[in-house]
Length: 275
Image (cartoon, rainbow, N blue to C red; front, side, top):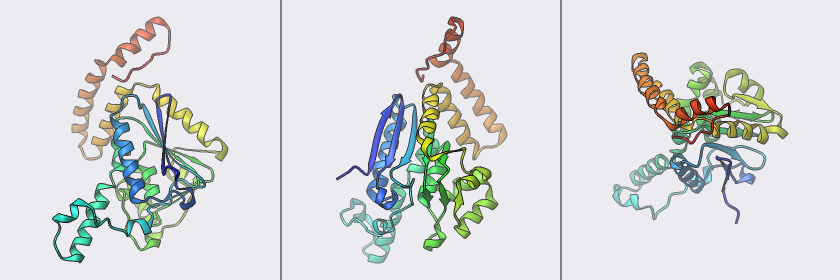
């Protein structure tokens, strides 16, 4: 049996590939769990300097596998704490299970290192949310985006209601959610949903070029940049300026900052170590 999540490490770049190509990489409970665990490990591993999320086969990710997500695990230890009412227990078990396995967008959005979605083919539903959670989205000219939730008579999950309005604005996000229309790669670039479009044959090389550039960069500064940006989503301007001040001073004391000045004196490119 092939792995449903493929992990590959190259030059400080961790590539995580969703690998259910026949199902357009639809997310099962197991795939969600494996992705979450891989992202948690990557977040804490100093050897990982950047993360790329990709999909195998014809698409990026078609969202949640409805058949998988309708199934409950009767052996789940959390079930023992719920009410004996079967309907209540089933609902609470579903809420708990979904919440526990929905941490991947949070990790992609907040982890202290750059994340990139490499999107080709469909990115739908939860797949669109995973891409939106990343710091960068590089799309093939064949990419297609859709929320898809309304067409499945669902309201949406995986943080899309938070992420999409911040990327493309509240009005356009409402349009994408309520109409569930498909968005081409060209339109996605126009509305700010993706950072760059490249020919399908160049997607991997272009994405890896960006990822290695980030992997060679000042990881300590990236960590504080992401903290600033995440905090700014809920803070006032005055609070953000205070936080930025603390983080700037901390950055100035890092080994990366010292390496920058040393490299400048020696006339070479800096080699950042991430601390």
